[in-house]
Amino acid sequence: MIRRIFLLGFVILCGTGNAAFADGPKPVQLGLFSPIQLVAARDPIYGLRVNLIFTNDDNEVAGLSLSSGWTRTGSNMTGLQLGVVDWVDGSSFGWEAGLLNYTGDRFVGSGIGLVNIVKGDLTGVQLGAFNFDHGFVHGAQLGAINNVSEGFIGYQDGLLNMIKDNFSGFQTGAVNHVEGVMTGLQIGVFNYSRGVSGVQIGAINMTDSLKGLQIGLVNYNGDSENIPFMVLLNCNF
Figure 1 (cartoon, helix red, strand yellow):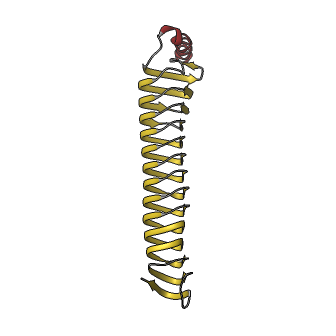
Figure 2 (cartoon, one colour; figure 1 turned 30 degrees about the vertical axis):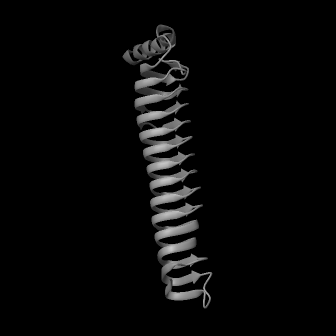
Figure 3 (cartoon, one colour; figure 1 turned 180 degrees about the horizontal axis):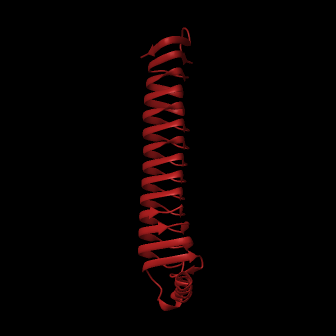
């Protein structure tokens, strides 16, 4: 009975909230299932957002966001997000944790989740089973599958690591695949980089151009003037 009364009061509050407040930034957002929410989606939130099922905010949000469901931010999010689905169409600045963390533009901070997706550049850390970044990464990715569509500077650790441009730093995993030039260190069962300026250590190491060292059972250097395949050790400086 008490739960029903509370729920009814919440619905009435949210249903009348848009008329009760003038336009502009609001300190608190309470949401049940959009459009049943305290503050209209058009208003920015600077403070606390609490969501039960689905809350939709078209404007920016800054502060603390707590959710047992899905929260959508149509603009930028700055602060701390804890939820099941943390969805930001703009840029994210801060820390987020959820089963799915999505940022439609740049992300600066730390993302922890089952799936982390950033459509723009990433400066910071992604920690999750599946990490995807469609921009440039400066920081770290740790997960089962890590995929970066542009360049990467930093540290990448996972079962499958894929970078579609140049990489500078340390990469470790079962399979490491860099479509550009790898400058630094690769350690894995299978390592491939179009160009290597550094060290590859693994069972199978492959590159089209080597300036450095390969240590493994099978080492391949495509631009070697002598024998492209070497066992245990291969070097070119």
